[in-house]
Length: 192
Image (cartoon, rainbow, N blue to C red; front, side, top):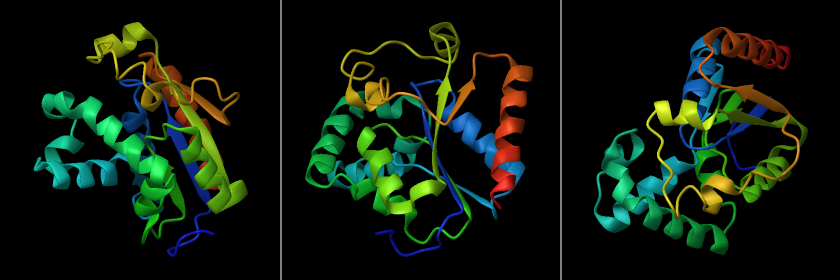
C-alpha cells in the first residue's frame, strides 16, 4: 500500500555508478520542469541523516559532494544494509512522506528492493532510468575505484537487472545529453 501523501503521476527511479551524473541529470530535469511539478528525492538522505545522528557526524556535510563522507562510506553502506535487511522499504517510505508534486525523481536508486518497493507502491507510474558514463568520464569527475564501495551492492546491485525504461548517456557530450533530456522531458510532460 502506498504511503500517505500525494499520489504521483510519474515516479522516475534513477540509477548509475558513482560520478555517472545522476544528481546532475535529476537537478537539470527539476530546473526545467519546476520544483512545483517535480520533486528530487534521495534515498541516501534519510540514511545519512540517521547514520549521522547515531554516529555524531555532520549530516549536511554527509549530503554534499565533499570528501567528508568518504572515510565513513564503507561503514555507512554496511549500516544501511543492516537497516534494509530488517525492513527493505525503510528508506523508501521515509523519502515519500509528504511529497505533493506530481513527478518524483528518485536520484539514487541502488537496489532491486528499491525498484520493487516503488513498483508495488505506485505501479505503472514507476519507470527506471539508468545514467551511464564511461570510466574515463567518471574519472574526470573525480571517481577513483574504491574496493568495498565500487564492488558492493550499493554500486553493483542493478548492473544485471535487464532493460531499463530509459538510458541516459552522460559521457561528456553536452549536445547528446541535451537531446536525451529533451526526450525525457517530453515524456514527463505527456504524463501531466
